[in-house]
Amino acid sequence: MGPRFVIDFLQEHADADGGIINPGGLAHTSVVLRDAIAACAFPVVEVHITDIAKREPFRRLTYLADVAAHAVIGKGVAGYAEAMDWLLDHLERRRT
Image (cartoon, rainbow, N blue to C red):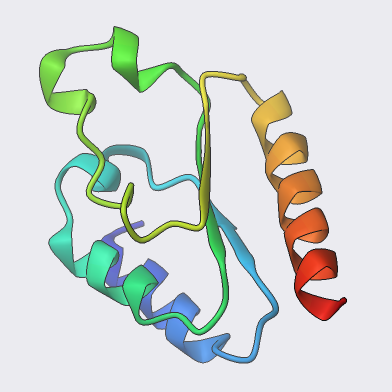
């Protein structure tokens, strides 16, 4: 699944309240994905199962860091639940 599929998905769901993405290797290589997330009107949470800070030097940089509303890194698959909890809390705070 390449960046075009993900970008199309983000654009097709522009009316979403929020999103959670595990960009995998695209986090380290895709300025296009970064731009697509920056253009989202909704908050996007970036999830990485592994701790990218402890991996190869090229994996330590994520182009999404400054455009994602939040990041959950190195929590394994439990990171998805943490991301969902954060997103729901964030949306609730915005509504009040």
